[in-house]
Image (tube, rainbow over all chains, first blue to last red; front, side, top):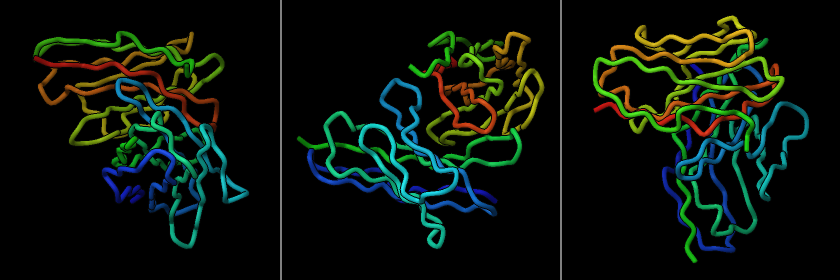
Length: 115
Length: 111
């Protein structure tokens, strides 16, 4: 069955430090992969997506992610974290073909940023 | 602003009641998706509509139903509500196989 695992439930980093959030997926075919961010009381905002092509994907707010098929991973990175990055981050895999594009989400990683 | 509008933002009701959540997708998006976010289950896909037709179903209870209208807005109906239905309900929309854009959600509290 398709699944997404985010091994880290909670991560704390200092402002200005680099960040890597892990995501592993299980999917039978080439996946569509996404990272979303959710601030308290807000909806989910799309950070970046991978459909095909270049395995290093650039997103908004200075985030990037790398698709590694051999490791079934799609880790999110940012070279220097800002206090405003504190939020919950969700990795998701797109499921289905045609227009059946339901998303399967990981359990999320809560990012805390220390001043 | 994602362009997806959900109303109401908050809903408080009692067990056994029925509620309707409304979603207006981004302009031009034909697909609408409903998700439930709860502490114990995380984000779960409920149902998808494409241009008025049901396209995919997830872990949606029989007490729940949805529809998409000719103007493409969608409604999620929840009936015989139980305490466990308390959650944040998200609507998302997409153009074809493009990425899904989420609304701010409706927080449903069952007392």
